[in-house]
Image (cartoon, rainbow, N blue to C red; front, side):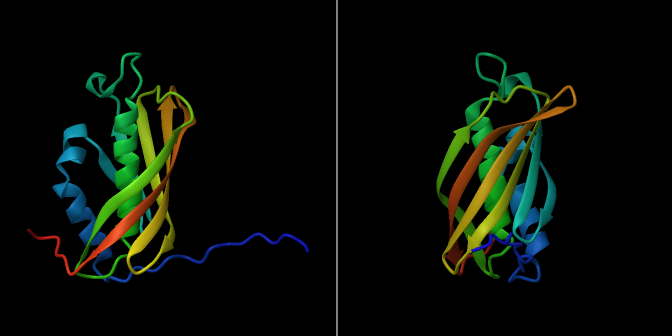
Length: 157
């Protein structure tokens, strides 16, 4: 049987206010503010977060720490998932597995998140992290994540 390349259809947000909901939630994340991470791109089912190098974000060899890499890709994939969730919901990461493919050695980390499947309660997302050094981009981590839709929750506390 011949192999045909499957082109996924664009994902559709279930909340008309998806973009403002994601942006507002991101600004409430103390961890993203602490790190200096920036939300640089969002569309339904996709998110990108960038983080500039600082010496206080490194491990002993001067690379971005694996925990920092994990933190931004968790948020990137989480917000990709949240963008597809209905109104009056919130998002919670319940599991992720990350493979560190190369040292995160560079001046900029770029984390992307993309939804693989968005169900009523669970969302499966994929995250990728790239590090840029002297204009060269290296794929440094890949992640798979499970998110939980928290129903009847409002973003306002």
